Figure 1 (cartoon, rainbow, N blue to C red):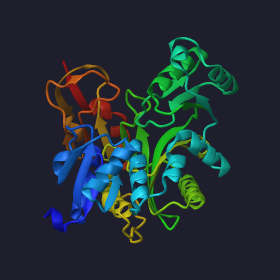
Figure 2: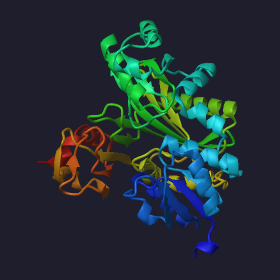
Figure 3: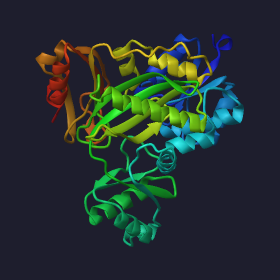
Figure 4: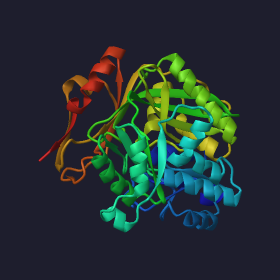
Length: 406
């Protein structure tokens, strides 16, 4: 019964939030989800849905007050996280950093400044004002021209406030950079964007749980990218980073935690490992990663990552978490297409049928793929018998698991 259960508001209700909803309910919470997407696959699993824009932090504050919630948990989106911490700060609810601290981590320009101050490797970056409409239409920003003259190409042009590869472009020439600048300016909600030097290396994720400013649990992976080179389409583990590289990431995480007095809970990092083993952090957040990543961590380590995230964000003690290593060889793979068209089916080659642990498919035959960079038909978890098998089949996975289109 609703009246006998504590209320938790989760900002989000898509497929990515399903493990959070289930974990919260298992912990005894009455779960309310929100968001603009009424078709989100997580909403039907919640106890109640109140559809609203979770990027509107004042609307979320009113929702939390009107529902009388005892805690708020962020979904897998930076706007959701920033609204969550704002609401919790205003209502005195536990489990989150201050709004100002969260901005320092989640806005790319502010994080770059923090990393530079703490001597944490980060791409050389410059902050540029967003161009006015007349400039987007043709007249380039003098600040932007000055910036790209200072940086070594190739460069990355990106909004400071968006995730999932939105508005991010790699430019090898000034002409490409100008087009990228226009696109980033048209997408951001802020008054500035970031331009940074491209870092050469391999892409990875590092997900940690902080307890009293120390890394109490850490997980690492290798990232895969398909058509969209700025949105992760898969991750496998154990990763290829050395113990020395991972030790550096633990140290960097703890430097940040000490400097900002971070509360207990998740700290998730994406990094590029340079050929010399240096990890360069390119993205960082204090919210769950998307596309069922937290279920991936649970499969690979046996640690109930969704449960510990809910516990942390509702102010519970998470000091009992263990630093468990990856057990076995795992892949989380998002089913994507390399072209537009009408979906007919999803197929799996016979040689990977025995590796499938879970298929979470939401496509419908007759779905029309209008944007191959973002469309997903589902997510599949695989377990392999050896490192060699994982490496081989991961490399070929976009051929082994395919969306068939007309």
